[in-house]
Image 1 (cartoon, rainbow, N blue to C red):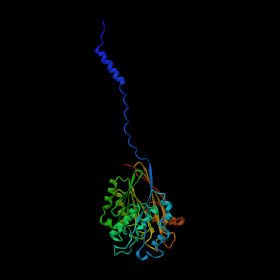
Image 2: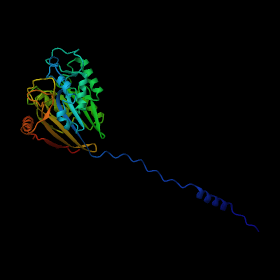
Image 3: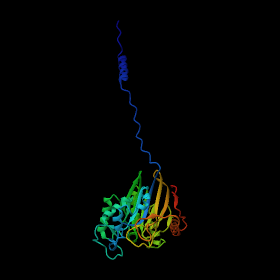
Image 4: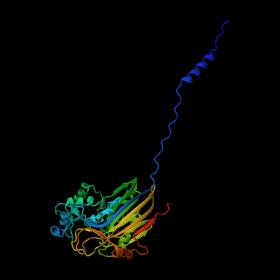
Length: 355
């Protein structure tokens, strides 16, 4: 008698066959890994004081004028005495006093001095390893709004960004954002809340460190005044990390205020507007920032005393580093306006612990 297989047996065999023929299950792909936060990062910025890359109308054609020096020596001449310093940093910043414009139309009356260079003089900045220009000063409008526009256009045409007088700038390196703004004294008197508003804008753009410049103080006074102090303190309180001052034309002191640093005046630097200088001493400021991730770990200031000319008492418009007793004297002048803060060539400021 022939035996018949159970239907259940056939179903089990078919199921086993399908399992053997089915493709092996692929392993699950690992979850995407988020990029790790950037590691330790450092950067160095160099700041210089008042720079006039032009002449007054009355002296423009004289053989000893700034314009003549550029014609004779070339665009690289003014910063060539410190080129070895500027070419080695990450960002070099000047306070650009005066206007870049090819004619004298629009000159504002009622002023004592009008400083102007032709627009091709903007080439002096990249030739000198200058990467950023501050415009918050009392000479950027020597030739009215037209002069301000031509100055910005000349800078843009030569790849030089700018800040101040309502313009903000964010510079980025290795994922870190450094914000820049600036204001002059007369604007601050009218709009004391403006720095705080601009600093907030820079924070909203993700800046990790904020530099704000002030153009204030009494000319040729070796000591900063109460208004400079008020401006600087207000700006630090608003969230800036560093305040850099200009306008007095002489060196002034340094202050550590809360979590910020204030340099009240760097003095002059390339000063094309004056053929007969009465003040020759200044200093360059190098700011070295060390970050761990996005957190500031330490700020190091390096003070580099300079003479604004290498041909004293004549002005050759080419600053050079000071040495020996001259360097010590300039550092002492800074110390005399710095209160209890001890001034040395290299000054380290560890960041306050995060709360």
